[in-house]
Structure formats: C-alpha cells, structure tokens
Length: 178
Image 1 (cartoon, rainbow, N blue to C red):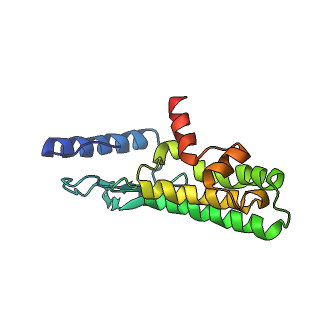
Image 2: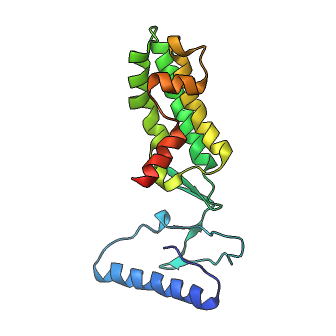
Image 3: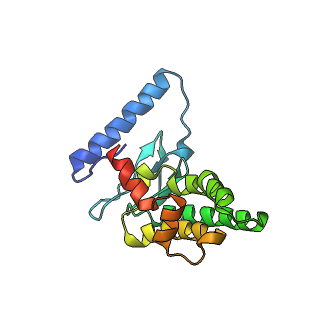
C-alpha cells in the first residue's frame, strides 16, 4: 500500500483500509503472517505513524528486499547497484580462473549469459540514475571486455565496437523506448 500521508484523514483512511483487509482475511478464513508485514516511511515530512494488524505492531524498516531487489526509504538504488556489481565481479572472477583461453568467442557468450543477467535483473524497477551508480555497473562490463586477449590494449569504446556490444546505460535507454 503506497500513499501520501500528510493529514490525520489520510492516516485514518490507511488504518481503516488495514482493518478492511483483516476483515476480508477473517471472512475467507485465510491466514496472514504479521511478521512478514512491514511499513516503510518515505519522504522527509512523513509523520512515521505506527500501524497495527490484529493488535500486532507492524515493523518499521529503512530498507527491504523483495524479489531480489533492495528498496531503501530514500529511494536511491546504490545498494542494489553495488549488489549487482559485486555478483557480476564474482562471476567474472570465476570465469577468469576457470578458462585459460580468453578469446572473444569464449568470454563474450559467458559474459552475456552469466554476468549481464545480474546487471540487468529487474532494472526497470531500480534503474540507476546517479552517475556513480551507472559507473559502478559499467565497470563490471569494462572488466569483462578487458579480459579478452585481443581487447586489452583498446579503449572501452573500441572494445565495445569490436565485440559488437553496447554500454549498459545504452541498453537501459533502448529498453525505455520499446
């Protein structure tokens, strides 16, 4: 449930909606795990009201992970970018240690199938907008392209062109128009 809580009327409406949900659950003899229910207060002027479900206080959190995506109360995506980059670098390290032949026809498909899905996972929900976050993700692809023997002495743009790849930011922008 997402709404702007700026007055006592809004707060009363949210609490009333919670009670309606509880009544519906009881009517249909369903169970609700109140320990899994959380509230996250967004914004600077949020009054940080406590909410209860069946006399149990709903836990207030600063960040929450849902379907592998980290949501933070300031709506910045740095933690998610760092998580994706860390996982991508781990897999690149594994590839580097495992394969002694670092030719483009080997490394490129491995990168595209094993690393890039972690950098692109659910990016529509957490698309990076700060330059530092974009650079964090792009560094992973830079590292992957530099692993290829024939690309070591080329610039990043030249490596992308040689491998027929686009930057991760270009991929995200292109996906926005589809």
